[in-house]
Amino acid sequence: MSMSTIQKSFIPFQKRKRYLAMCCEIIQREACFCAARSENIIDLQFISQGYHDLESCDMAKRLQDHINSVDHSKYDAILMGFALCNNGIVGLKALKIPLVVPKAHDCITLFLGSKERYDEYFNANPGTYYLTSGWMERDSENLVKMEDTVMSKLGLDRTYEDYVAEYGKETADYLMETLGGGLEKHYDKVCFIDMGVAAPAFYREQAKKEAEKRNFKFEELKGDLRLIQNLFDARWDSGDFLTVKPGEEIKPSYDCGVLKCG
Image 1 (cartoon, helix red, strand yellow):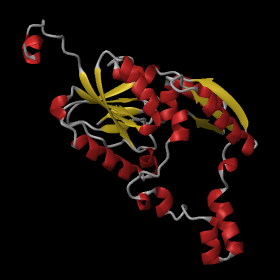
Image 2: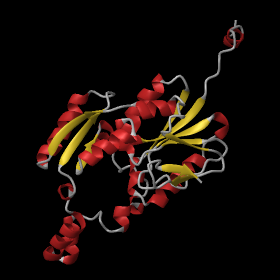
Image 3: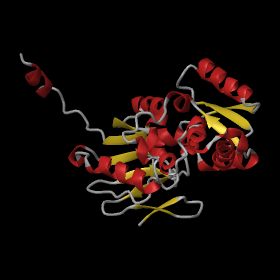
Image 4: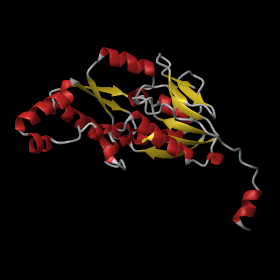
């Protein structure tokens, strides 16, 4: 008896919703974990975190190109594993199926589980540099055209030695102080967020070493997968998600709602 004949003898299986989750690679471990636990069928597509180094319009254009290339007949919706990210998703347009995106300013909200928890910690701890396993593992080296990045366009991707060779040491020192200043100019604490999806000891130690090297304070927070899991489980009625219907596009709301349709 052939396999197809055997399959036809079964009672038809109940069909699950099928979604394409288009995610920043920073949340790759977390997305894989949540997709495996979801009752829905989640196909995962990971996008270079180097897109965040692009100008907002360039990031949005590249993401829209990915959306346009999707076989929309296969899916019930496209789930965007991104936050507002410096307006990098503004202007994204839903085509034949909805786009669903968390109402979050940046991916730290995705790691902490809610914009309320993020706002509370952020306001109480200014000058904090956040790290997760994904931030330590991923970088922008796989971006196709590095000359398209904001840093490159502004000339800020050049080394101290480059400036010395072109302008001399005195001017190079001035440029490095004016244009850069390093993390120490803006931060005084490293916060490691343990998401519970990777053995934390190695990543915790790396984060501690980074803090010690820069003479920063160190703190560890327990992450929360709620937003990512709810995104994949289609629990979108909590007010934490924006559903963009075909023909609509994502716009910033400039209020606590973060995003709106337009």
